[in-house]
Amino acid sequence: MGFTGSARLMLVLMVGSLWGMSMANKDWGSGFNHTGWDWGPYLPPNQTQGPNTINVGGSDNWHFGFNYTEWAFQNGPFYFNDTLVFKYDPPSNTTFPHSVYLLPNLWSFLTCDLRRAKMIANTTQGGGDGFHLKLNKWRPYYFACGERNGFHCNVGRMKFMVVPFFRWRH
Image 1 (spheres, rainbow, N blue to C red):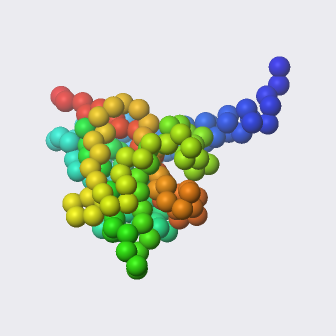
Image 2: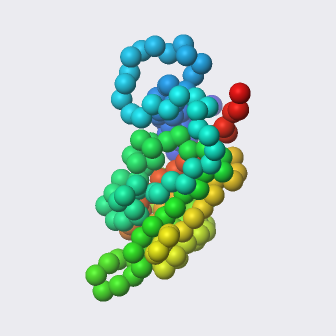
């Protein structure tokens, strides 16, 4: 009963994801981790007051060539009922169009496979105040730009994932 090559790959990806999440969440424990690691933003557990509105990419907004996976890792955690705002320029002669897709699973996210993805914001919805999406379900959200048949996702690094946490009140 050995693993096939694809099963091994999936196992490695799952273990790597769990390790990455545990490293990202190292300071969210109950105070027993005193390793002295001081990189990244420190958010004490349960200190957020309520839902936040978060501009995807910060002041850089949603554009080609920005590493959104790294941005999400550095700006997390994201919480249940937080709102993500995708701001991008509408299509013109000087800008490439962008969109926002919700991918159905991790494999689609890793491979930028848009065949079963759902477009949640078209090329014009990112202008002005941007497109708002509330994280109102406890599930992984896989986001990607679907323009150029996945080119922006694959080459332009316009993809990220979040799993919202619950806020605990004391």
